[in-house]
Length: 232
Image (cartoon, rainbow, N blue to C red; front, side, top):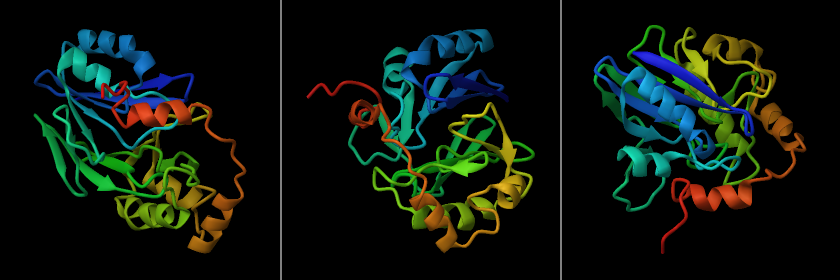
C-alpha cells in the first residue's frame, strides 16, 4: 500500500490518498481546488480511484468528492443521511475494504454531529485518520454545526484514546507544519486533553474565542451535496 498526504495551503487541510497493491485507490477529504494535484498523483501511481471518503461536512473548504465522482465514477462514502446514487452512508463500526486495505469507521461526534474517524487496520502500526476530531496538539472546535464539547471529549477519550498507543494519528488539519502524531503522544501531551477532566475540557472549549469560519456560509450548503451545486 502507498499513502500520500496532500496539504491545501488555503484551508490548512490534509487530504490522504491510499493506493492498493492492485492499482486501486481511496481518497480521504479531497478539496475541490486541489483536483489537479490528485489527478497527477493517480497518474503517477497508475491507480484507479474507487472511493472518496468524507470525515464530516466541512465548513472551511469545498469538498472535491462530487467532482471526483463525475470524473472517475468513484463512490462517495460519508455519514450524510440522504438518498444519493453517488454515495453510500457509512455506519459506526463498518469496515471499508479495498484489496489489502481495511479501514474501520468510527462515529466521533463533537466537532460536528456527523464527524467520523477512520482506522487503517491493515498496517502495523495502525493508522488513524482523525479528521477534525483530534488534531496534533489540539481538537476541532465545537461551537457550530451541532457541535458539542461534551460529545467531543467522550469521542476522543472513550473511542480514540482506547486505541493502541502506537497508533499513528494523521489529522484533517494542521496550522504549524506538523504532519503526524500518535495516540500515546496526544494522550500525554495534547494541551486540551492530557490529564484533563471533561469539565476542564468544556471550559477550555468555551473560551477559545475563535472567529466565525470565513467560508462556512458557502461551504456547508455545497458540501451537503459533496461540493457540487444542487441541481434541484
